Amino acid sequence: MVASVSEPQIRRSRESGNPLVREEAALSSEVDSRFRGNDGIAERSPKEISPHVAITPLGFGTRLTLRVGCVLLEDAGHRVLVDPGHFDSKAELLQALKQHAGLTLADIDTVFFTHLHFDHYNDLDFSEVGEVLISDEEMIFIDASAQAGEGGDESYRNFLNMHYEFVAPVFMRQFMRLYRDARYDFENVSFASTMRRVRAGENVTPNVRIVALPGHSPGLLGLVCDTRWGNTLIAGDAVLSREDMCSPEGEAHLIWHRKEQLLQTRDACMKFDAIVPGHGPWFCPATARVLGENNEIRNETELEINHG
Ligand SMILES: [Zn+2]
Image 1 (cartoon, rainbow, N blue to C red):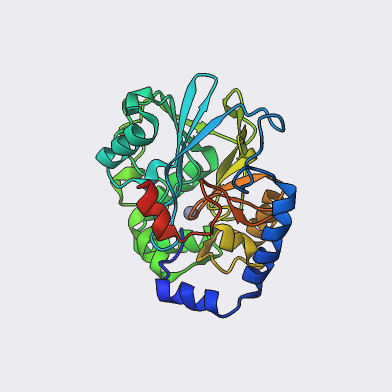
Image 2 (cartoon, helix red, strand yellow):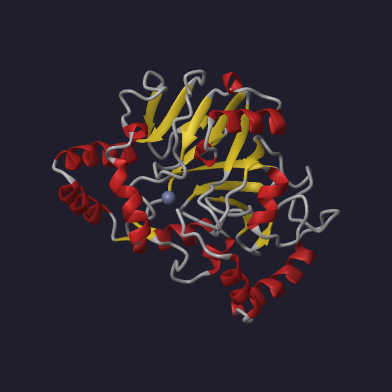
């Protein structure tokens, strides 16, 4: 999760001649000679890569709000919905599924949550879905937080401080509600009978693998698969955005479980061809270029308008 940053703030930082932006411009010209797509984007030709998994954005993440990226993966006849916490209601989710993939929720085999922060996770009535996968370590945290909550607010606050090295006050207020929130009462959620706890190393489908991306939250898990963009990482909040990846000390984060781990995880993310971050457009980490139907660096508001 990230802070709401006002647009004027972002504009000011862009106009100030941020060296990272200049570096990106140099990288952008370098990338043109390395990738020879028709429109200059980093999409590879079918000869260069044999993609197994189709990836469709159902909603892009933004920095300006707490909207997170939500994608649909289709592999070997299985359909996986990742982080539908992007949507505030089931109606919104159904509309996006219909519009972008011609599907309904009953067509989805698996819902996968990267982690249980309230902007990524939601119970939108997943009773029609085959199974819902949640990180075992995140569940351990939630189980323990319910116990701490029984001791009242002070006990719960101490528990949070033990598990998170840093939580900005704005998120602390949200977190303080978590242990009383019905969405986290996992014995009574819509998918109580189909929930499965998972760990890194397991596969979600034959060609989609779960990986551990520790640091942001106690048990954040990502997904790795070969898509038309190459070896692709769905990173959850291990990488908030392209800007986060370019900032040396994780300045964009206002919450972390273990910062040292978070920075190590982010370094490891550099090896992928494409990253689907928690809160921003997809990008290639080696070049910092945005991946999409057009290679201009667009602001997140435009992306949300275009892709709903
Ligand atoms: Zn998060």
